[in-house]
Length: 283
View 1 (tube, rainbow, N blue to C red):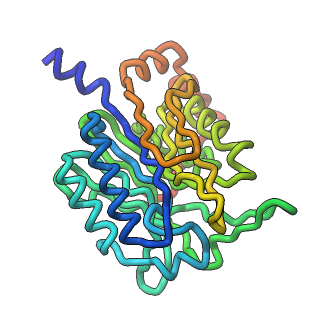
View 2 (view 1 turned 180 degrees about the vertical axis):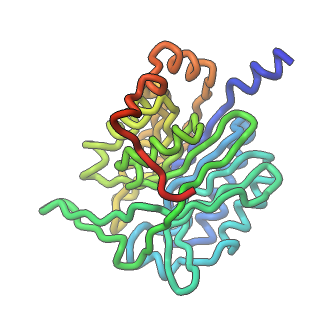
């Protein structure tokens, strides 16, 4: 029993920084191949990046959109079952009742669809002279939180821009999450400025592990991703970080260390709930 508990206290997380092309079938084949490689290296939870099956851009979302279940998520279900892992399917453009969503599907070791998370906060920004982007031109926002349980810990999901909203991470921490995963594609303006800063902030604020899975950088793409998929500890340390190329990032998540940090700095019991609160308005 002691050995089992010790085994469950640590697990290997893998983030796949995929080089995404305009050919969906190729993206799916290569993504599944890298998932298999991660599993052979002992990964128990694996995440793909945001928009792993198509280029990122408002003109691409309707063109590549599919229903869930659909072609892409069926492949993810099959490879999750084959490898007996928890697979966080990055995100794909989803079509449902005439609307489009930026959606992450998560599959269990038996291939079952555990949850479907639709990006809550749409990426509508305008930085003069640098970047203007409006997801809301084609996408609709989700309206629900998404967590799932594993034998190791509870995991909370966000997608890219969601990481800027501290309240989402706080709700997940309140709901018992110890790992937050954000498939994301920051760009060459926001990436160097805020990518790591936001991850470390969410991790320290909530005493959780934070992981981000980005596409690899393609300088010829209409939207150039920052890359640098990262894992941050509850202490704010960067445990693993990719460069810009296609790769797999591995990190051994130590839940005993998380428990120690929460014991040493007990912010949850010290919150002044008589003065303030972050409240979820939906289940």
